[in-house]
Image 1 (cartoon, rainbow, N blue to C red):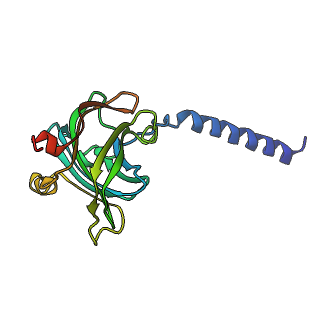
Image 2: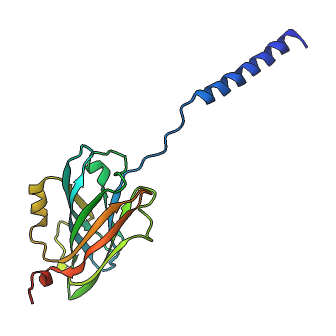
Image 3: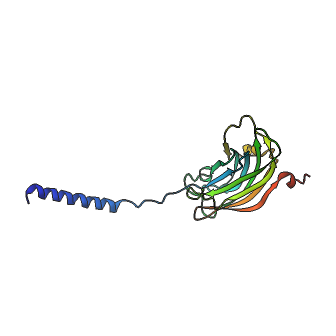
Length: 211
């Protein structure tokens, strides 16, 4: 073996040893974290869906509690509103702690450009982290018959407004005379969110006792 060959072999061995040491000393990869999300889908093929919702007394990362108010317009047939609870409550891209529960109230109504008669509202409420939010085996369905309303001229695409301001939230809730649903949402340790019904879909006129 000549001198150059010996040097080359030593260099290769050194590189292998250094690589092994570096790999050993590298910190273990942290598991990916994922925000907790809530989605409201409109599966009605013939109408837009407006929903106003309030998520009551949800715990923030600093230990306080907040209400989250949402107004959303969803296009016909799979229009979707996505709410990032972690971001709104100060958790960034971390999931909400397992066992987090809150009450969610929703008012929804259907719209179309040329309203005539009634329609069958088909809303889907989903929750979970990024790995589970698309799991359609665990949604809460909101199905109800309701008279169609005239679609406002300025609504040409889906949009969502989210606020933690109680004054703005009260303005969003004002005048919703529609289909009402109430659920308890629970964040599970596996990243899913379970919705337990408190009030199944009912017309607000019936709640108020209006015949």
